[in-house]
Image (cartoon, rainbow, N blue to C red; front, side, top):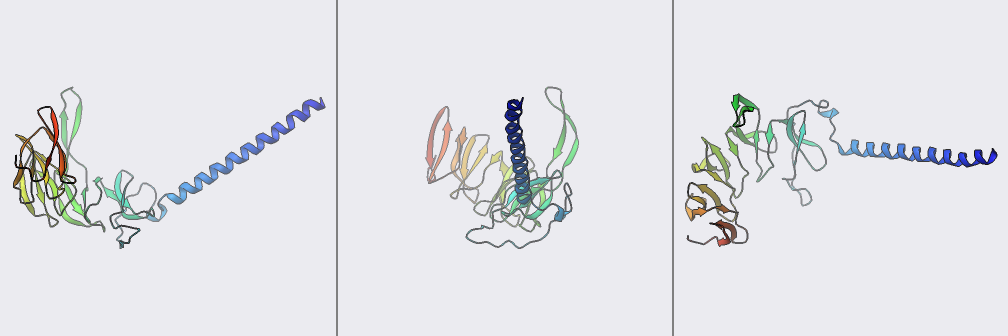
Length: 241
């Protein structure tokens, strides 16, 4: 009897010690999560979308001015800095990363009725209206575009009326909408798609490489990946094809 009691006592003690360690570990994890989470109480509570609070973002060597992350709260999107503080409170329907000081955002979800897909399923028809904000959350270019890309080398691709063109940071067209699809500029050239395939234009909209490729990538180090009629290769930025 005594041997049986002595054999169970250490087991109970070990179990109690194990449970205590588990509780301590869970408390530590909860504390870390609390510290890493932005202070929601100061922002008006969980799930509450607040107006953006203007804050000054200072660029330093260790903290680039572009270092903002997209977050979602209560179905709205905004931005935090590397310390987890809100720079622009969640208020937009859809946002993209900042590039060259501006970010493309769509402020509201606009539905335009119901459409029937080929498989017979129903889907809401959504109308997008993108504009560009600065790091205070203010619109620099008002929402007006069906889709919008990131700024690169001073220009950004935007879609209006089903075709794409390029605007500058004032919202003025530098290359009028005319392409089926396009990408941001890289090394002075941008890949664009027409009925004849992919080609490359300069910042005036002039073709440097005529549309002809089935697929095309951005230029990097003077070369770009392209494919043509099941063949793969690369072209140089000075190619006259």
